[in-house]
Length: 268
Ligand code: 5BU
Image (cartoon, rainbow, N blue to C red):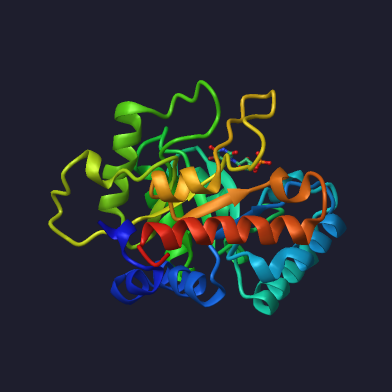
């Protein structure tokens, strides 16, 4: 039951260097908050990231929505990640055959693998997508999350599909450190590998004071996600940058996520 262990304990036990690094970071910053900064200009992305950097462990980007992306954007994001001690997660949701995603991950305008510590993929194409991304990511010490479930209404990532994400992750633990999901999955099917496992669950669809956005998004609170469903990292977008004071909002979500975690591991 890895969710009952502290992040420090999980860091000490984990064999994957990327997972270890994330758990250590969470403990160091006393944060399990990822901010999803879905804005469309480089200046806005950097301004918001600079302001909330101290409170987050993961900056989640959609780099393809920037109208003025340039190579310096990646340089500046990396500088902020070093300055404020967080990891960058490009929420690219790769979804093609292995050979194509290799090119999408390494090349093009964005060269995602060169700056994003973490990225994610749908398993629609089958396991080849993980193999293709791993060929680029493993030598760079990057890591992958599989989309096991989505937060949106009517999502088709359910049932057997979700279980297949778990099976694929179990077979690719050198690169795949966890899931985007709405709850922990390990208990749903026996682990036939016989090896210890401790996947990281990052969960979008988190906001206090709203249930949804009118376009299918469904929100739960940090407490529901972390304490009741055993997820590890809360991903908050508009709850932070949507209205009010950015820094105050980030602090509220950092505390709510951390308090729920402390309660889960019996430290509160
Ligand atoms: P929001 O503003 O907190 O609703 O933003 C949520 C972010 O998480 C946004 O960038 C989505 O693309 C992303 N997301 C999601 O909302 N639900 C999912 O299941 C997945 C990603 Br996967």
